[in-house]
Length: 190
Image 1 (cartoon, rainbow, N blue to C red):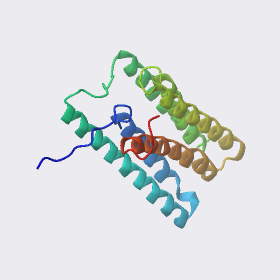
Image 2 (cartoon, rainbow, N blue to C red):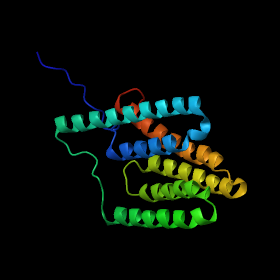
Image 3 (cartoon, helix red, strand yellow):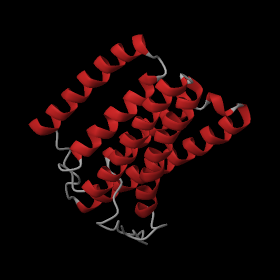
Image 4 (spheres, helix red, strand yellow):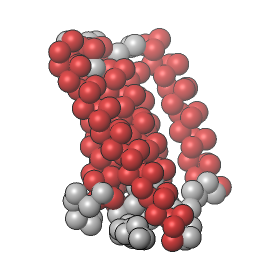
């Protein structure tokens, strides 16, 4: 008896970029959720972990389907433009954090979200799923700006952590979870 295999729809893969986004989202959320209190933080972290697991499983399913079909999936695309964008991001990220932590420590997280958002906006032109990346980049950029404003207006690291850190984590995990749900056929194609 042969095993029936359900082919993976071409329009619904979960790629390595989704795993990277989900990983960053998990880190943003777990690291910055302590101001939520122990119960709410536990729930948020459990949900984040479950979302991350679904994304990983979607990626594993995509890899298996592409191996079976012997077609090459999503080219990684680490070309010169990609490397230049990442290099600028790294310099801006670490340079900005070094300066901002001396001026207003609460602003560092807002800066990180802002730089990651601008990085994603720049990358959106290089990737086939550019519209999704652009929307994530715009949301993260907005959260970064809000985080910076809150940091300088209130100097409240906890408030910035929840709005900017947990918010960024939710954006990253939520969008990658939607993509992985399409891989599993839970949601229709984009």
